[in-house]
Length: 214
Length: 209
Image (cartoon, rainbow over all chains, first blue to last red; front, side):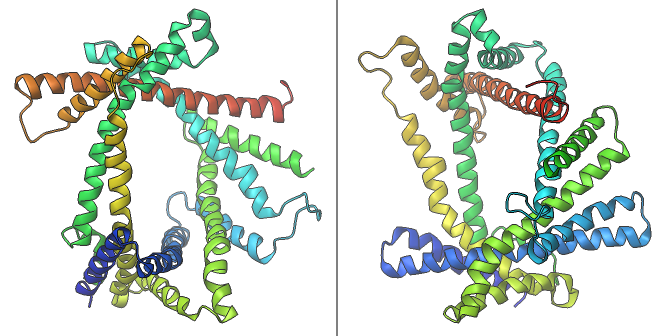
């Protein structure tokens, strides 16, 4: 019951869904339709695990007054404030239809700026990484450096000023050698995914069972 | 008023994140924790509004889709993860999602990651009127893909004309690809940085148009 039944569910479900793709019959379509209807419902409940674990972690931190426990309030308040303001009191801040509620405000003016700033922050770190990676110490490092410089210059106006060949070469690198490398990696990833799929379906890979209740 | 406060709050948190460039500090830590709470809270609202309500609760309460109680109950089994004595029950919904997702993904992965890629790699090297750089590009693309695949083939030692030379050409192609990808990523991040600077200097301080 604890391990065999879940493994059987995986095997039966996996084989069924795999086979239905190759059988263009109405029953096969019914199976797919039901799956499309059921899977998001079951999957949605997984969010409970995430919210539960995060809440437990931060309430523990607050209760034990662990290091930096004050910041745990900054997680818990918006975590439950967002659904409260979105679902229970979704009134707009200004009363009009143009002005949105508190949850919209939190999303648009805190979440969006923080996330895009975090990504833009990577520009600084990627620049320092480039300094280390792009030192032309060997022929391969030189190729890496040249490709990156040509692609970067090809995308900015100064590249056009330096010569038409620069954006064209940048585009050529992106379209041909870059595509060749990406395609080879993609094929490798694809075969890896297929092998993992089969290993999970046939119960060879069982790490997903975890240790819950043994 | 709403917009003005919003822009000030946005600018404050933008600067809070950039303050990390100097060193980690309480304002950055606050922003970091807030974003975790808000994003998960937002996801909860999104999932409730787009899945739980329209696909589960409304059809069940309308009385015409009572069968949906089954996936609902199956989903609820996730909660047993928090009760150690029956935590193993949470494997059932995971098994359902895992098995079916693997089954659905198998033919789709085969199609998108293998067959389509092979099909797209099989292009004529030359056709009339094709410029030289496209012909050269096609040669690089086809033989480059093969060479890069040889480089990733670890079942044979990379020696001899086929495996040795092939893997050497392969690593050159891969380096070109990595360089191009790196350059492309840098440009993407820089444009995000420009966007944030425009936000601070334009929307917030009105120093630029």
